[in-house]
Every structure is written in C-alpha cells, then in structure tokens.
Length: 282
Image (cartoon, rainbow, N blue to C red; front, top):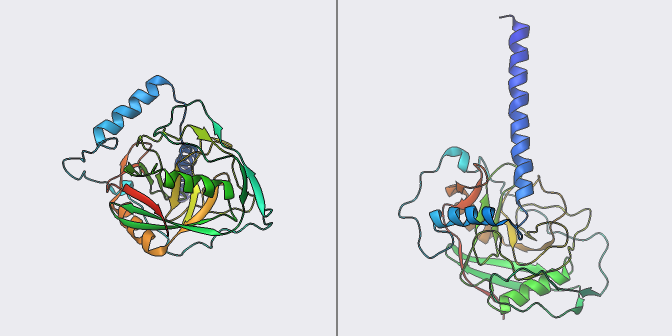
C-alpha cells in the first residue's frame, strides 16, 4: 500500500468518526425536548423501559449495573459559566399567560394566574434530593413568567417525590433533566407558556433552563447544565443558576454514568436523583 493511499484511508476513517459524533450530538439536541403527545405504542414502549429500570416507582435496581466507558462523560468542564444576562432589559413588568394543553396533568396542579409580573429580583429554591441539597437561584430579570411558574409549582409541591429522569454525558450536551412526576419524560402540568429566550443566550456549567417539545411549550420539566452545553442553540428558556457546591454533587452522578435509553450517552442516571422536596427560602 502506498503512503498516499494509507493517508487517504486514515483521513476517510477520521471523517467518518467525526460525522458519527456530530450525528450523535444532533440526535441528543433533538431529544432534549419533552415529548408531551406521543402515540400509544411509543408510550407503551417507554413505560416498559422505565419499569425495567425502576424509574417510575419506588423500587431501585437490585444491583448497580455495569457501566461501559462510553456511558460516562469523557470529561466535565469545571469552570462556571457566566450568569445569563439580557443585553436589552425587559420592561419593569411583563404579561404572563398560562394556557391549558388538553393533556392530563402528571400531578394535579393549578396554573399561575395570568397577568402582569415583575421582571426583576431573584428567588432562592432548595431541592432536597437523594444526593444532597441543590441550591437554585431564579432570576426574574431573565424570565419572569418562567420564574413565576416555577415558584408556583414549588408552592404546590409539584416537584416533591419526583425523579430526575434523564442524564446526558456526551460532548456538547451534559445536563440533568427533572420536573416530570411520571419519570418518563412525557409528563407535564397540563398547561404551557411562552418561551423567554433571546438571540445571545448561551448555556454552560451552572445554568438552569426549561425543557420543551417545541416553541412555546414550556411546562414543568427543566434541566441543569453541569458541564458542556456547546451543542445547544438559544431555544430553551434560561431562568436561573445553580451553585458550585450543588454542581459537584451532580458531577458524581454524571461520573457514575447512564443506563442508555436514547443512545450510549443519554438515559437514566445510574445513581438515582430523587427530589424529596422543593422549598423556597424564607
């Protein structure tokens, strides 16, 4: 084999590997949205998968599953991202509307009242979980309607006794997703509200954002960026941050890996993250 032919083969293999990695990143980005309206057979399959792994109930797997290297993050960035900030501030007050979706709520809950909401100030929320307390800071200057909704759900104990059902550990998307009482990734509060995004929005370690199933479909599911999120475009409402001590707890969960469901780097966390209660600061 000539040197030139050998180099061409190496280049071709490298190009194939890059294409495969990019295809995996695109697939994970598509899956970041929650699936609210799935056809019955898909729901049945998903339910079957979650029953097998004990995500939807109180029973945990009898033994910790063996986790392959590809089911764990190759690395996790440790530098905190800058807190999001709008280039153009919102008005002092904005109008919020919460519309019923026609889908049954995963847990009975009332939507927040429609109307004007202040677009300033921060609120503290603590998630008491099976891995320790996660400390969130919600920023109404970023997403006032989202913060209003999140605080409403906390006040109604919507997040209590729920599981963070999804963990991604791949390059370009390292998030922990929570907020679905069904634990399947398809549950919501039975209503939705508009996105609060802006073109310069970027995601990184420590950012708190809403999951969605398309434009203006926010409900209750949210995700915490614990590492790399360079693969995300600004279509997920960022509404706050999580502190560094909390991120270190999530790092340990990520390092334990995933039970694959949507690919080798996307699935149920091997180390369960159960939200026992969510409370606001006094």
